[in-house]
Image (tube, rainbow, N blue to C red):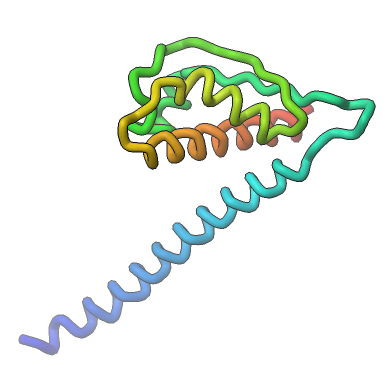
Amino acid sequence: MVEVWWPLLAAAVPALIGGQALRIKKRRGEEERIKSARGREKSSDEIFVCERVCTSKRMLKKVGAFSKDPIPDTCVTVCGVSELDACSDACARTVCVNQHQVANWNDICLRRCQSECLKLSSSSSRSS
């Protein structure tokens, strides 16, 4: 009876390790995108970067329950010296405006919103 479980275990372990590796790779990719956005400050002739963030169904789905009582279908455009600054400020004004009692949830809300904002920003700059 024990011999039957060994092949199943042998098949499950690589799948679990592979799944964990994919999650780590995705997390590192998001961290790198935020770091690179922090360094993308504009030159003196391009003073501001503007980002538009909306409390769309897609954004609220990405942020999840970390957004407390958002007002659906509202948008704000914010300008800053980098894409990260503009995204951070826009997220704080729309998606993550109401603070949770649990402080860590506010940070997670901002990080997820910034990440999504930067994804949209980089995809729109590639298509232009």
